[in-house]
Image (cartoon, rainbow, N blue to C red; front, side, top):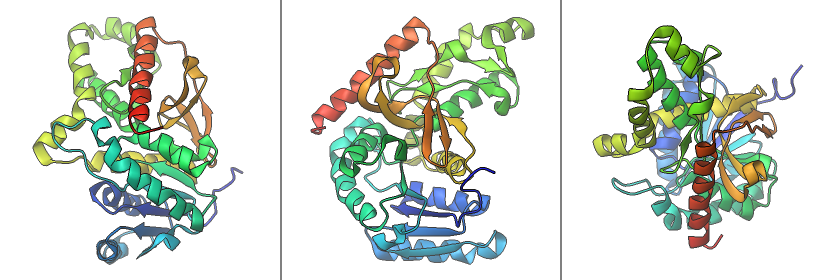
Length: 317
């Protein structure tokens, strides 16, 4: 029997803005946990959110939802960090770094004071930079400081391919790696549909990807900007992505997800956090997977790592 399956499952969310609460709402509907803790700089906001969610509990599985200070982190298997300034229209994720680094530096010690054993799940942007900061400040093992990474970008990629080929997105397999941001890398060389390599699938169905490839690449890369332009923020889809990561941890599923983690020699990369396919289970990141990439993809991944390294240098890390 896999460990962690019948433990009292608790998740604490630090930051009750749109992203944090979209995650909490989706978590309630999914029924994955027995307890949700909410922590926010403005206590009244967290209290109001806890009340609002609690009023809907007759429609869901039983969950204890409470708001409070950092003592809410106690006994949580996962502490989600969703606090920080939001990305503005026209602003890159890396532009957010200096504003949000100070927030993470303040939050991490408070969490660890009450719960030194939790897995930290980072979602605040720029998530790769802030994950690195959280790792350094916390001094936790890398497998326990992970980020939402390119899980959402990967799902956007699969969704667009599924639309183009008119096939269920769950049968489309492809990954986005590197930065969760402008330099991310769509791994076209490894895309398959129901186990059939993409080019073979194109020949079989008579529908070439060539004319659509650039459009899909740009749509995946710029998806957040398009949403922000229209509604000022993205939150529903990332909330669902976070639920998927949480499920993999709490249920010890050993699922392969493109979460962000510290590079320790993968593709020759070191001392930078970015996304690769990882086996995610009860301990956080169980394994980081590396597959041969096309030459241009590996070059793009190195460039993405350099972009992030420069971002870290700019904030003193």
